[in-house]
Image (cartoon, rainbow, N blue to C red; front, side, top):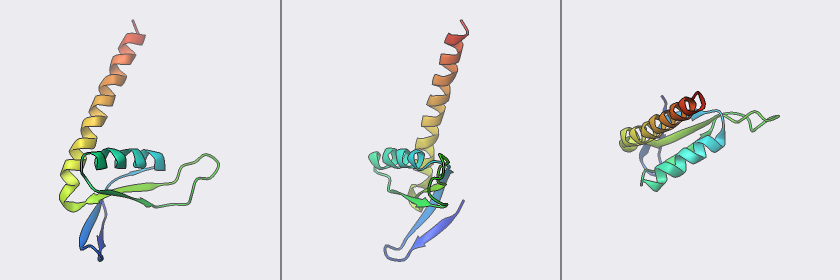
Length: 92
């Protein structure tokens, strides 16, 4: 977990998660912003090369960290439940 300080706005941003594909971070950013949680993306690597993604960090303001973490964790739990349910239907 890393943090950066934005001297212009006196806001501390903290990395919520790092993903290998920018689209994944953009999707999470849109979700957070739809719930009123400010988020930004930080490119950590080279741009895409031969189909390999670009490492991207999703950052939120320090005071919103726990809310953002809870929101994204709830989505992961729901998607895991849906995956398990579809696997059990396929096995029938």
